[in-house]
Length: 507
Length: 35
Image 1 (cartoon, rainbow over the protein chains, first blue to last red):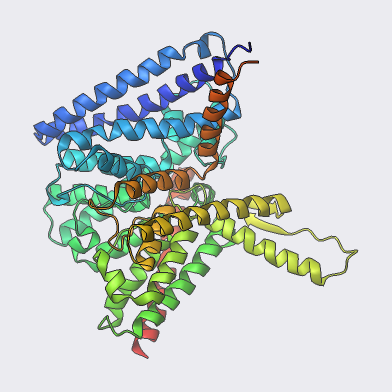
Image 2 (image 1 turned 30 degrees about the vertical axis):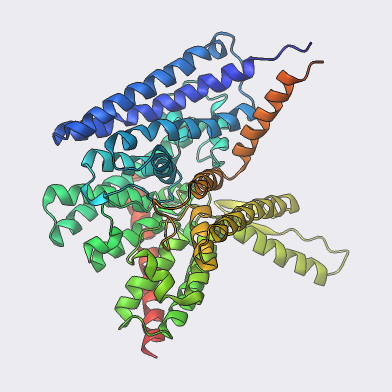
């Protein structure tokens, strides 16, 4: 009988434990916030939650300690499984404070909100948002800020000592950009960029908040939360009315700037910070984004202007263009109530939003969707095929594109990009079908499915506490699959099926 | 010092580019709505 190799489980357990501990440390932030603001109930909720998280994280590390003792090497399969399994365990652990707060109807709703935060989607099932404690609001926005960067990136920056296996887990979280040759260095640079913008962005929104009439402490927390939500392209807001609460054009413009910045590739920010200014216009992703955002914005305004809903150009800009940019960057911040999309925009406006929600932002950024890079690669691949057909058979042509550096456009890259786009479209189609199965109108089901698949967060009214439980479960899975870009989740499923087979089959 | 200068320059360039793009969208928006 073949003996089962437990080394795989030890490696996965060891590194998963570290990712959990890294995220558990974050609970200290809402604990300190609640303590300073004398919010005793949230304080206790987080004390209980952090203890549960540390116990589970340490147990996993101790169980997997043979990884370090026997110096077991991490393989690619381990990296993908650690990335995907740690997100599931973290979803369950991070839902505990929500559950204890009483602001969610069920543990499933708590898990939904956590996964929505981690994946920077922004759909929410939390009840009575306007009366949420600052501690729990801090937690919601930390989850979305960290989710944008990645929990693995967090753990890499602070907790991982060796880098041998670290790169494999980093890639498992759907990141492959190397800003410097060392993956820990890359993770630290990602954090440096985010923290720098956090300080600048929060300061700008804090001042803006005070100018529109918020009290200084309130303006600070609103600024911090709205920056975290914008930069991470998350879409959470501290108030139920989302951006409508502020009734401020300047606040809206500031969030637009921050969420477009957040949707850019971290490699692009790093290149520009190093003095390579032309990267902003040469990069295939920024070209793809600016072109598709401009076209979709123009089309949406043209289509909605015919319906004469908005009285003037400024209102049209604040309602239409704001949502086009919010959807395209997969942020999900909104200046309309959910049902207004269905009742006022008409089918054309909704279709434009669905398309751009699916396209999404840049790769290796905080944004979702199938990514501008893949759209650009597939588009250039089609152009290249047309040019090959039209040119002489003897002529050998090499096609290139610019993404941080000049890269060759080869068939395997076009095929890989196309496959991931197909996976996203399948996820979208299943979500739409499920919505119509439960009685939602087709356009509403498609809109919500696109919002979930693209990790956007705009809602047409489908996402609510009364949504059927199977839809909530599907949306959680869809947000998770889309954020991790499928491969690491498929690796997790394959690993479990393989493990069960090995245990069940005797040879 | 050079690093800080590059960071500030980079930030200003990014904001300026996004600002120009938003202004362009705003201009197109006005033209379409006013027609």
